Image (cartoon, rainbow, N blue to C red; front, side, top):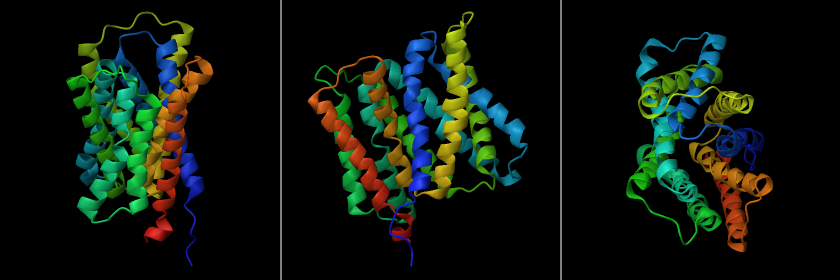
Length: 290
């Protein structure tokens, strides 16, 4: 008889990835030179991808290159570019709220493409996650800039599509090799954008060098390896809901490290988002779904 409990060890390991991504907001604002968003994305993805590809030394199968390029664009290249466009044109809170629709988008893809109807509890929890994120982060003075909003929506769709298709399109590569090739190809897609849009880097101080190293080794190599491992072991909807931990972690670190204030509404939103994540994990129990 299958267990009625979710795969919590896999979920907890996967949860480390968005928590690491949430910490990169603090690293970027406090350590990195300003005004070079695409360079940060490039230096985050490309070195980590090179390291993993050289370490694993596994080539993708001949027929899988097209799918691998598509996954690299959705998960890394196009997503990172849209993410930084949204970050520069929107308040971070609004970008995070728009990104919180990712679990709902993955549910829609699973329902529309694979005819896997999401449990009502998961659907309601996904909506509650968006509402909770809005209560946690938004303020009455939030500016709704149309280009930034479009970039945030497109970025959320990219990440949702990448999460869904990574599970649906097996490449035959083990997790580390799959992670390495996606980071490498996505980094190569970002390179011309960074060269065209960003100013050259100045000589880096030790803290700045350590910041870029953290972004690459922790924020890309480790975090994406855990993320893609989770996609291979958990339902795509469950993995996508864990992504809400990224802005949640950023808010908590801002409160703990930078002394940023949290209101009663913020605390209520934090509880709602965390409850949404736990509810989706239980509702998308693989044993129950099978």
